[in-house]
Image (tube, rainbow, N blue to C red; front, side, top):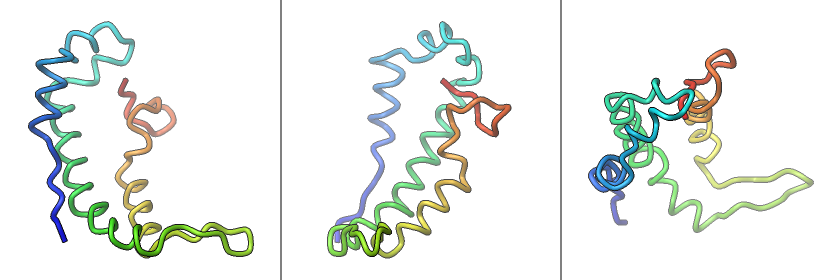
Length: 106
């Protein structure tokens, strides 16, 4: 099975050199929280999560798929645990306001 490697170098090139996100984020209300160091750390950790947690699920996702049983959605093996790791890692709250447990990022 192929091994997924997050294209971090390409992502950083696009964000910094093509889109110039630091200049753009300065114009946003919550942009001051998105420093280059913070964005770099988020990308690196997201890449690790994708490589180590999500990528191994591709095969079970393709083979098992999702289906409906008695009105309940059944996901492939490992998906529930991956989602729990996603939530525990705070990924769903990156752009949520800090007062609601988010990171307050744009």
